Amino acid sequence: MTYPWIHVISLLLYAAATFAIAVYYIPRARAEPDPGRRMARAAKAMKVYDPFSIAVLGVMIMSGAFALTSIKDALREKFFVVMGTMLFWKLLVTFALIIVASYLAFGLGNRLVGKVEIGEAPDAAWVASVLTRIQVVASLVLVLCSLIVWIAVSM
Image (cartoon, rainbow, N blue to C red):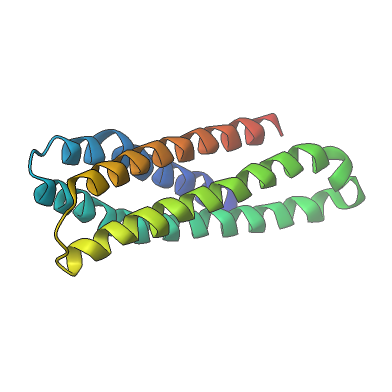
């Protein structure tokens, strides 16, 4: 298997997991009438999503870097002429994705999971706020992934 395929497969896995969080798991958690069960259901999903998403995102970044190195070797001095502008935009959006994805996993997901694991009593307003932010940020992650794919196809 070559690096571009690993890159594409890791992107698909990452986007699918994020899509599942945004449109399935968090909406199901929000439907729970009891704040404690709502928080526990969301935390259960985020406990799986957080490490998986960070690992797959890492594979995606490293496989992209390895593939890019091969392309740079092939193009030599023409590399920046051929790919410079689009590569700049792809890397800029990728950097934004890393920041937003880290916030989703570490800033929101880990806090939610931590509160459930220590047995903290749920505050209904806080739970609602976190679930809304998870859903919005996951949607933003999907937009950024789509933008990265669009840029990559344009390259």
